Length: 358
Image 1: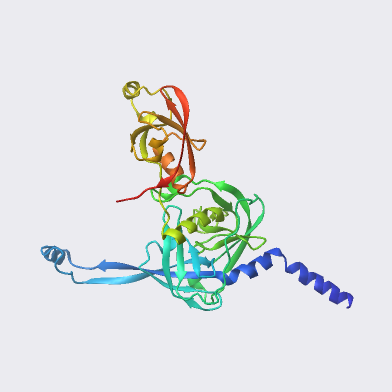
Image 2 (image 1 turned 135 degrees about the vertical axis):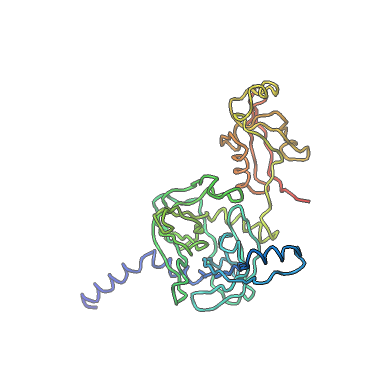
């Protein structure tokens, strides 16, 4: 072998690094998810609108028309049986999933297997799962701040004419990041997230976040941005949390709702008179105002008038904070409440059970 050939081989070897290898192994299982949402528009003169209103809902009003709004997201096949992970918000308002396509050009017919609205996770199932590439969920527990990660998905996929996914590379900027509860509103709990500066843009939602070994460590979910584009503040749901949701969905067809069995009010929002009447001696915390006798918390010893100051060692001052922690737990998880009862500190221990709605 000549010296030039040696140099060329060395260059080729250096180009095919761990990141390139990881992308090659993962990309075939990344899918594009196209959804359609139907909007009904009514165009009518106010006079006729009032006229037709006299008939109530017995007649369909004229001049109604529908138009389809298309949107796009990402996902990835994670089991040999053809289960696909994506974000719940990708399919949340969809009237139909119009197509799920693979990089090799195949299109899959899918159904929703189960969702968890609170953690923004949806599981789809391909109806024909023959010879599908898949990438199993990896371990996110040992992620290191500063290590390389790769975001794979389909940003602005509707502007591309080929099915191959896009990749971006960055590092883990922070781990176990908790986002303010008002970001997700009342129905969604974004916590314990992976923060990365790998570029995440519209259409990336639901795609995998992969480490340099080609292991799926998270699912790209959201960005903080003033412009709507990438500004180096991307967030992914860790694989460990996804796996727990998936275990519930595949076994029960749903994420089982965690339940403690009580309600409360913020001590700081109560009047001095109320605090005196209830013999509350804690300066802050959550006062238990309702509790079911069949609940795990009551059976463990929690009572009306107790003030909860910590849940699993995390300080709480408002009932929404208790709910926020509860949503992040799973049926069977242990809970330790630190309480103040008439000035004395105590612990209450129990396991989360499922909230069954009748």
